[in-house]
Image 1 (cartoon, one colour):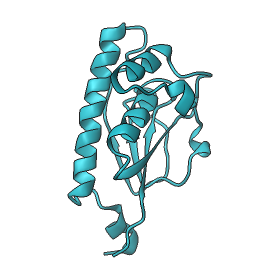
Image 2: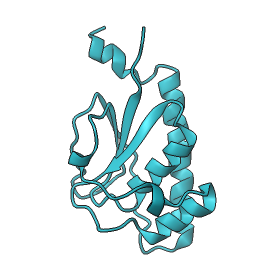
Image 3: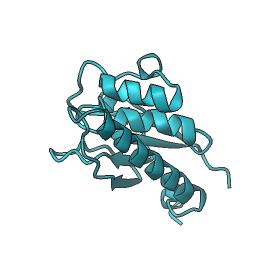
Image 4: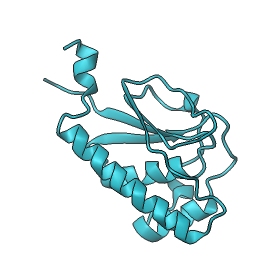
Length: 146
């Protein structure tokens, strides 16, 4: 069976912190398994500077150069949606599979909170990647009606 490449969206209302961090980390750790995107419905003008600093420190990626804030209408059709835990009406985006990671927003809580959020996101992305590889999340079977 020839499977298409999965598209995973990390979605949060403002698309400025957690979802952006998840997109960046997924591009580093899971680019061999899926394409990563992030988006929101009430976006900020810029990516959170503390999030930028943490990702640069941990992964050597400057999100200001590789990413930008996006509305959910700015990304392609998505297979898997991961909501970050918005606590204020997470955005709805059509997909084959969805889960919520329930992450607290580290904004305004200092660098330690951002580092902790990045660590949790890293572990969740690695687990998501493993689940996809192992067929535990198989959107293709659903699409093909199997």
